[in-house]
Image (cartoon, rainbow, N blue to C red; front, side, top):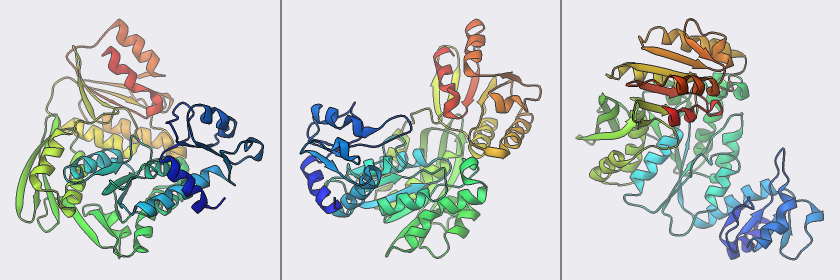
Length: 429
């Protein structure tokens, strides 16, 4: 079936779903496949639950008038999203990077919403399925869209930019993450830079660029850039750190005027994420006072640099993801925080391939210099290089220890890859 024909069916629906647990009335169900499921088998169920059409790619399931047969449901979802993006004509800002892209996306959306009707990626729906689903939520009312794009293998950003077709974009940074998939740091840079490669080919495209990042400056050669960075008044937006005790406070300058912001963000590293949002806000005409208000009111969620105050302790929960770059940044920030009784609870960093042991060893080496009151390491990788620090095989073992002897009066950093399930510790601390 031609995409133009399928798009006419989509216009009757206006909504797409890939999950029979969520079937809005008159929506279109697209049957995707995974290692343990085949969406084709649920086509009739989707119709029974309220979908107007179901799209399948196996002929035996196309046994009703409102079940539409295509060659490949995933490719169809992506092509349908690209067609809808073109039909809507919304200006799209594409975001990728190793660390901080979700927080940056949230900050950008918060700033832009002061002036515009904005669609932005929900949660971390930033892959080959999430990006199309985000784009298919565009309406004529949306004036801007902020689309996050993630990758853990070469070529994935190339795929996503040719679906989203952004008008401008930014790479937050590049660091050591998903090395198992990328093969090397150079592989990370090459893949993230596929956003730049696409924008070079697009008329009137431009990027927002961290001018302090030499790798990104080199990779972005030939592109029109709007620069931001630290303590450089020659840039479009310049920032200066005031405090991080524990919340980030900073000053920013644009066109010679200074503004102060007190945020609810934990981590001095978040100043770059905020400056990116400021640069985008200024470029799109959001007044400075609105930018400051948006950033000051934003409260992070989803276990990303959240400060949680329990009855007994202060917890910095950054347990959604971890890689050597973000782990080092979190620990360096913890060092700077002027608070007593610091305790670090760290879980393994995943998907680092052959370099995993050395990367964990370097983090342990850093820990020995921080002067923390206590360090607790969790997981098999940290177990190989634990030095003299406390070590436990998994989060369940730590839960048992804390249940018997609960710490009190501590300022605790909790960070590790999501699969380590460290966020569970919030409930007992």
